[in-house]
Image (cartoon, rainbow, N blue to C red; front, side):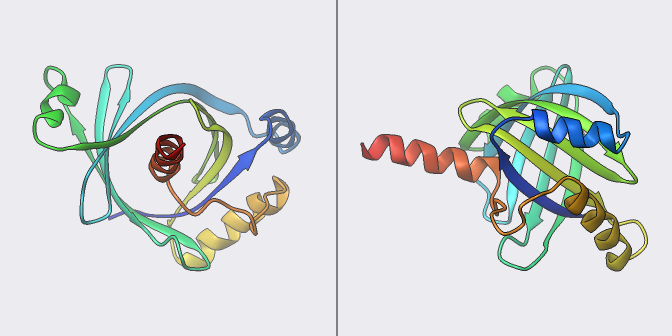
Length: 173
Protein backbone atom coordinates (compact mmCIF):
# COMPACT_ATOMS: atom_id res chain seq x y z
CA UNK A 1 0.00 0.00 0.00
CA UNK A 2 1.29 3.52 -0.76
CA UNK A 3 2.21 5.65 2.24
CA UNK A 4 1.67 9.41 2.75
CA UNK A 5 2.74 11.85 5.45
CA UNK A 6 -0.18 14.24 6.05
CA UNK A 7 -1.28 17.40 7.82
CA UNK A 8 -4.56 19.31 7.82
CA UNK A 9 -5.04 22.85 9.14
CA UNK A 10 -8.06 25.12 9.19
CA UNK A 11 -7.72 28.46 7.41
CA UNK A 12 -9.68 31.67 7.88
CA UNK A 13 -9.33 32.19 4.14
CA UNK A 14 -7.34 30.66 1.30
CA UNK A 15 -5.78 33.99 0.21
CA UNK A 16 -2.68 33.87 2.45
CA UNK A 17 -1.89 30.27 1.49
CA UNK A 18 -2.35 31.14 -2.20
CA UNK A 19 0.09 34.06 -1.87
CA UNK A 20 2.69 31.82 -0.19
CA UNK A 21 2.31 29.25 -2.98
CA UNK A 22 2.82 31.99 -5.59
CA UNK A 23 5.94 33.16 -3.72
CA UNK A 24 7.28 29.59 -3.90
CA UNK A 25 6.36 29.50 -7.63
CA UNK A 26 4.09 26.51 -7.06
CA UNK A 27 1.29 26.67 -9.60
CA UNK A 28 -2.19 25.30 -9.31
CA UNK A 29 -2.49 22.04 -11.25
CA UNK A 30 -6.30 22.07 -11.33
CA UNK A 31 -9.51 22.66 -9.45
CA UNK A 32 -11.48 19.58 -8.46
CA UNK A 33 -15.13 19.28 -7.44
CA UNK A 34 -15.31 16.25 -5.17
CA UNK A 35 -17.97 14.37 -3.30
CA UNK A 36 -16.73 11.86 -0.74
CA UNK A 37 -19.23 9.28 0.49
CA UNK A 38 -17.95 7.63 3.69
CA UNK A 39 -19.17 4.15 4.55
CA UNK A 40 -19.21 2.39 7.89
CA UNK A 41 -16.09 0.22 8.01
CA UNK A 42 -14.43 -1.41 11.01
CA UNK A 43 -10.93 -1.46 9.48
CA UNK A 44 -9.97 2.16 8.80
CA UNK A 45 -11.87 4.53 6.56
CA UNK A 46 -13.67 3.65 3.34
CA UNK A 47 -14.96 6.30 0.98
CA UNK A 48 -16.14 6.65 -2.56
CA UNK A 49 -14.71 9.74 -4.22
CA UNK A 50 -16.95 11.01 -7.00
CA UNK A 51 -15.20 13.51 -9.23
CA UNK A 52 -16.99 14.23 -12.48
CA UNK A 53 -17.35 10.86 -14.23
CA UNK A 54 -14.63 9.29 -12.07
CA UNK A 55 -15.49 7.01 -9.14
CA UNK A 56 -12.67 5.79 -6.92
CA UNK A 57 -13.10 3.68 -3.80
CA UNK A 58 -10.44 4.67 -1.25
CA UNK A 59 -9.57 2.59 1.80
CA UNK A 60 -7.09 4.02 4.25
CA UNK A 61 -5.69 3.83 7.75
CA UNK A 62 -4.04 6.83 9.33
CA UNK A 63 -2.24 7.34 12.64
CA UNK A 64 -4.16 10.26 14.17
CA UNK A 65 -2.43 10.08 17.56
CA UNK A 66 1.27 9.80 16.68
CA UNK A 67 3.64 12.72 16.18
CA UNK A 68 3.41 12.28 12.41
CA UNK A 69 0.23 11.41 10.49
CA UNK A 70 1.31 8.53 8.23
CA UNK A 71 -1.48 7.17 6.06
CA UNK A 72 -1.62 3.84 4.20
CA UNK A 73 -4.13 3.83 1.39
CA UNK A 74 -5.46 1.76 -1.49
CA UNK A 75 -7.37 2.99 -4.53
CA UNK A 76 -9.87 1.03 -6.59
CA UNK A 77 -11.28 2.67 -9.71
CA UNK A 78 -14.91 1.74 -10.25
CA UNK A 79 -16.68 1.65 -13.58
CA UNK A 80 -20.21 0.89 -14.59
CA UNK A 81 -23.51 2.58 -14.13
CA UNK A 82 -23.74 4.65 -10.93
CA UNK A 83 -21.22 3.04 -8.50
CA UNK A 84 -22.53 5.33 -5.73
CA UNK A 85 -26.01 3.82 -5.96
CA UNK A 86 -24.54 0.31 -6.17
CA UNK A 87 -22.44 0.77 -3.01
CA UNK A 88 -25.37 2.33 -1.15
CA UNK A 89 -27.10 -1.05 -1.44
CA UNK A 90 -24.11 -2.80 0.19
CA UNK A 91 -22.76 -0.36 2.80
CA UNK A 92 -24.33 2.02 5.30
CA UNK A 93 -23.34 5.65 4.69
CA UNK A 94 -21.77 7.51 7.63
CA UNK A 95 -21.20 10.93 6.08
CA UNK A 96 -21.07 12.80 2.80
CA UNK A 97 -18.50 15.56 2.27
CA UNK A 98 -18.58 17.95 -0.67
CA UNK A 99 -15.67 20.20 -1.49
CA UNK A 100 -13.98 22.36 -4.06
CA UNK A 101 -10.28 21.53 -4.03
CA UNK A 102 -7.50 23.51 -5.62
CA UNK A 103 -4.67 21.05 -6.22
CA UNK A 104 -1.02 22.11 -6.25
CA UNK A 105 1.89 19.72 -6.76
CA UNK A 106 5.42 20.05 -5.38
CA UNK A 107 8.02 17.25 -5.41
CA UNK A 108 5.57 14.38 -4.83
CA UNK A 109 3.55 16.40 -2.35
CA UNK A 110 -0.09 17.15 -3.05
CA UNK A 111 -1.13 20.51 -1.62
CA UNK A 112 -4.89 20.87 -1.27
CA UNK A 113 -6.67 24.17 -0.66
CA UNK A 114 -10.16 22.99 0.21
CA UNK A 115 -13.48 24.78 0.56
CA UNK A 116 -15.59 22.17 2.32
CA UNK A 117 -19.35 22.65 2.27
CA UNK A 118 -20.59 23.38 5.77
CA UNK A 119 -17.11 23.14 7.36
CA UNK A 120 -14.96 25.98 5.97
CA UNK A 121 -11.50 26.33 4.41
CA UNK A 122 -8.56 23.99 4.96
CA UNK A 123 -5.07 23.27 3.71
CA UNK A 124 -3.85 19.70 3.48
CA UNK A 125 -0.43 18.35 2.58
CA UNK A 126 0.07 14.75 1.45
CA UNK A 127 3.72 13.86 0.90
CA UNK A 128 4.13 10.53 -0.86
CA UNK A 129 6.84 8.22 0.46
CA UNK A 130 9.23 7.70 -2.46
CA UNK A 131 12.54 6.49 -1.00
CA UNK A 132 12.33 6.43 2.77
CA UNK A 133 10.48 8.14 5.61
CA UNK A 134 13.39 10.49 6.30
CA UNK A 135 13.31 11.85 2.73
CA UNK A 136 9.52 12.27 2.81
CA UNK A 137 9.71 14.04 6.20
CA UNK A 138 12.34 16.45 4.85
CA UNK A 139 10.18 17.41 1.84
CA UNK A 140 7.11 17.64 4.08
CA UNK A 141 8.81 19.80 6.73
CA UNK A 142 10.05 22.22 4.05
CA UNK A 143 6.47 22.92 2.94
CA UNK A 144 5.12 23.07 6.49
CA UNK A 145 7.68 25.81 7.24
CA UNK A 146 7.28 27.73 3.96
CA UNK A 147 3.48 27.65 4.13
CA UNK A 148 3.58 28.78 7.79
CA UNK A 149 1.41 25.88 8.95
CA UNK A 150 0.43 25.68 12.61
CA UNK A 151 1.42 22.12 13.51
CA UNK A 152 0.33 22.56 17.13
CA UNK A 153 -3.29 23.19 16.11
CA UNK A 154 -3.39 20.77 13.19
CA UNK A 155 -6.59 18.81 12.75
CA UNK A 156 -6.04 15.14 13.48
CA UNK A 157 -9.19 13.79 11.92
CA UNK A 158 -10.81 13.35 8.55
CA UNK A 159 -13.51 15.56 7.05
CA UNK A 160 -15.79 12.60 7.84
CA UNK A 161 -15.06 12.94 11.55
CA UNK A 162 -15.59 16.71 11.52
CA UNK A 163 -18.88 16.30 9.63
CA UNK A 164 -20.16 13.64 12.06
CA UNK A 165 -19.19 15.80 15.07
CA UNK A 166 -21.00 18.78 13.56
CA UNK A 167 -24.13 16.69 12.91
CA UNK A 168 -24.09 15.37 16.50
CA UNK A 169 -23.72 18.89 17.90
CA UNK A 170 -26.61 20.10 15.77
CA UNK A 171 -28.78 17.19 16.91
CA UNK A 172 -27.94 17.81 20.58
CA UNK A 173 -29.29 21.37 20.44
